[in-house]
Image (cartoon, rainbow, N blue to C red; front, side, top):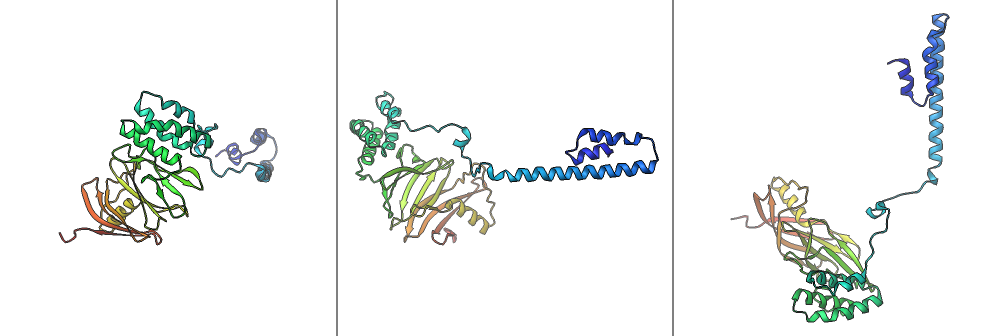
Length: 318
């Protein structure tokens, strides 16, 4: 490496100094004296660079306490704009649409008026005629919305829990696969979206409270797979997803390949889901391996308090 390149590698050295060092060999005099002078200059330059770098670092860190402290940026933060606010009037206007799908969507979305007393009463009055509609899906949606907004809470689709809160879904059974994949909660007379699931949990298929109503099993699904989680809403705790957990554990026990797909589909299904006491959930499952080339029927038991899952094969003797 040339001397000039070495100086540049050190960094933060003025270009004029580099050129001066490069030309110093042209100065007439004894060769030994010239080399010593060059060595001394290099040492000075290195010292200068190190000192200036250290001073810059000290100055930088001295100002760190004055900088903003960003812990986490949400997607909304990074858009640098307010997120879209709920517009009840838009959904009230949509009730007059000739499009049944728009009306159905508007009826369900008007439940979100719950926290605004004036809008809640207005929505109640506008929704009442829809209970008598011939379209059963629209009539059922209107009856459910009125049940929530009137604070009657008589619908079997509203689950009352031990902590005094209530959970439910909107767009109940709008698809053959289930309801909207958002879990709503009313606590202390306030409605909030409690938990929203992402793909592949595209639908909430079933909510199954424990006998003491302290835990809730939430069954979600896509058109290819099913999933189960257990919620403790009082302590805001959530179990691991149980179907995939069972698939991985059983596969490891039986030396089966248990690759997890990038789309997180498991191609596995559940049935006979039931609580055994207040803390243990049991279900039967058909677990898929090697892209459904192998299907294993199993029984799964998950003890929530101990985070313990047991998986046993059904019909082992056959």
